[in-house]
Length: 488
Image 1 (cartoon, rainbow, N blue to C red):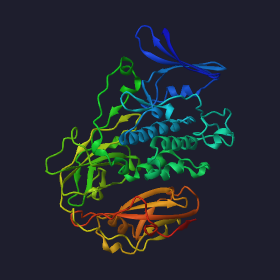
Image 2: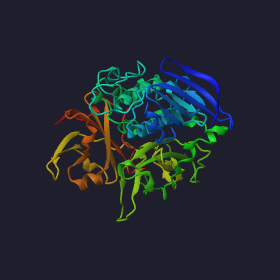
Image 3: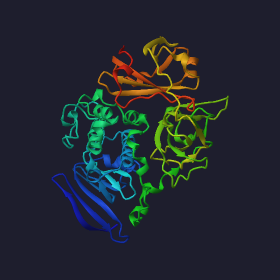
Image 4: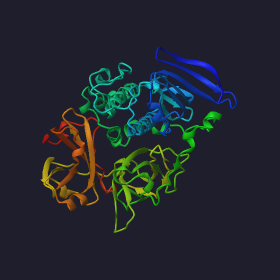
């Protein structure tokens, strides 16, 4: 193909970047001439993800690399004011693209707001892989010490070889910039601080681990202004966008079937969508709607009152073979009327788009003036050996008998630095069936091999018309925590 140089975008000793136009079609591209043989671009050609620019051509010599890639029209996040909803979407989409890169052994090494483009369709696109590398065994440090000071951790400047935790550090700095003052006030501050630990072993060890921690609060705090969120506008489609490979490469997952309330428990249930993943990897988004009447809400017109994400938590009921997923929403009920939930299967960002939302039946809520369910008392750690002799830890409390079988307990674990380490939700029925008197704590939550940990418990009522779920303040007082326990 023949190109016309339209504009010089960037020039330095190591690179020259032009916007170019293909003569025959008029389509715009980016052409990069880079110093050095950057074989990471060859790997990027095979990495199909909507958050990346498509690489059309990559040519290599011993001392240079030339790349033709997709031109993305949009604004850098550093120069764009994002709504709460856009912030959440940005975190979700950035985690998705980083997971895809890290899965191929690619470390970006220069994540920052100016390298994140909000495109014309409102999606996040990660650009500029000139500093990217693929870790090599046997090396203690990187050969090329590149990156942006302020966003790069110590190991990126010669103290050790960079790995996925390098990008996690830069992710934390970037989110701190994007959230601004909110990063100091909201639940996310502990997670951002953990990303930015100087010691890589004290950061999140994977993007998936960070994502699960970040979204465990179901986005409630960032969605306080949900009633003011505007519907997404339909943007004009440009010729070069219509030809983009990634926009046609993904199928849409089917919507979850049979979303319904489990009787009067306030628990939403739906059939599993197999292509969304299995076990703990299966992901779903939910939205909660409220109405004065029992008429189904119009999802395209009515604003939800809360939304969130969840993974795993599947079970098989009544001997059926099909997996069924559930989430307790009773803690969200505030005003008498009718509640509905809508659920969407989460696409993997590479092969599948997320599904449309499917709407449940109505839940008639009359418990606006109901008393609070009794809080757990006498929090304590229990440990027991499993069948292989390995020690398992459980979060336990004294008054388990005060609850019904369908009441569920959200145990959140924190380390000595005050960082959220993970959570697990079990019903009383599950606790009794295991027979250890508490909720099992997955050792994967404890990134450190040993050290003190403690937990809190919030109870989700399965009788929302009789009792409210217990309240967990945003700033958790000391009396809500269990004693410390040294995990050996």
